[in-house]
Length: 313
Image 1 (cartoon, rainbow, N blue to C red):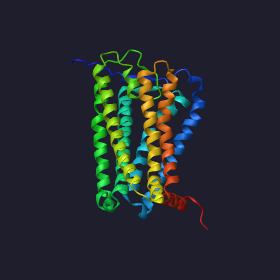
Image 2 (tube, rainbow, N blue to C red):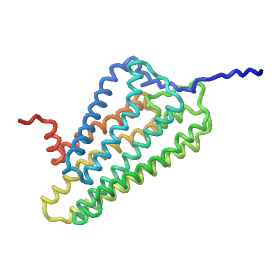
Image 3 (cartoon, rainbow, N blue to C red):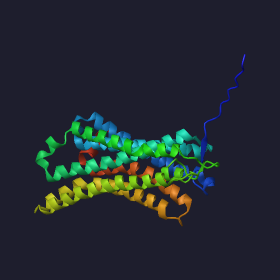
């Protein structure tokens, strides 16, 4: 009888170092990070709960806010448990499959977030420039379909990233100088030819962000043009007030995203720990601020939140 010796090898693992050079301060850094994360979760879950419970908020605008809240919950949740595991328990290991999966979901949600902001800009354009057609053009069903299209687009655009990297040989050390498996950080660990991967990453950034920002700029250009044709100052103020919250949300999302990508590519003189902290804060600050901004700037939502959170006699 032939004997067969079956040997099993552990799946290849990577090591996430955390914040390079600041390992001794990981526990202290975890305090603001976990605080921002918890505040973001509470704010976004509160927004979702209020919109779901209140029939009067079942409108396209608030459906879009729910989509934004879902992405704001998912974005840090794909990263922070692992980050806090590194900070608190020194759990730095992650499998190759787990790393590529984290990268895929993280960037997919980011592209979905951008698509949601584009849809919100379109929503504001119709509300201000074609208010009489708003109810027929933007129904809840149509917003849901636009959200589905945004999700499909995100999956199709991001899926090639982990597929390309999975075919590459990684360096023997398998050490990622980061708290997460961000695409650029993983690419730096590849020992093979990364020309195709790098080009696709650049094309993806310019196509997604460039296309989305162009549509948003076009929408707000048309909004400003329409508002300036109105003679009433009260109408001016009302129109701009409806857009203020969305503009703030766009600024806190796109500005750090562009800065982070550009510093990775061209900021060779910037310390690596600065890169890592910027990326982590980019994943934490917008989700924390978005529900606060909309809660402050949207009176109807603010009143409904107060109804459920404040004690009533």
